[in-house]
Amino acid sequence: MTTQRTTLWVALVSLALGATLLHYRVHTPGEDPTDLWPNLFSLIDLVLVSALFRFRSTALLGLLLNSFLAFLGIIMMADYSLSATLAGQVKVTPGANFFGWLLLTTFPDIMIVLADFLVGLGLYRVILAEKAAASSQ
Image 1: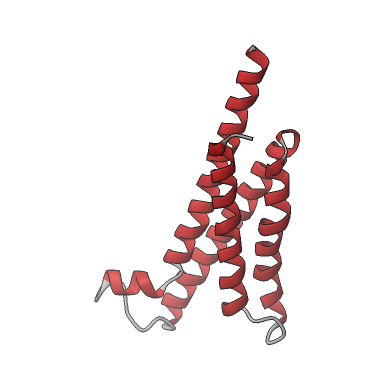
Image 2: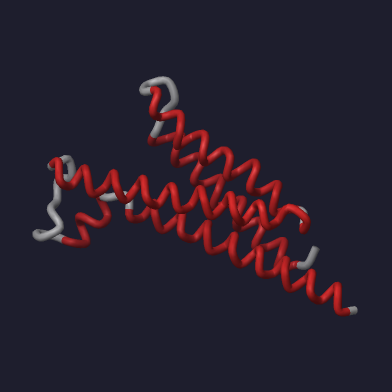
């Protein structure tokens, strides 16, 4: 395994671990049954997606699962932020202080998910380049 591939894999695992710890802090299991899902999805990202990216033969499955989880997370968090804003649960309105409102929404969390997706995509491209280089020799 090349250094670039290893570095990207460690970055993917680090982002997934950070997301898992963040979800566990925000959605503490036991308080509400709906808190199970974010924790479960982030654990799947940490364990299964990371394991699938370790092997060249299962990297495509890792990319597909990582993409599905990322898009699901982005959609769910954006929906929550918009719903909370419209319901008046966010203290700052977008018209009064846009950047203050943006920081109080799930936008920073969405950027973590987007970074996780992009690192997974970069890792898959490195795996494809390695495969092409190995087959041309």
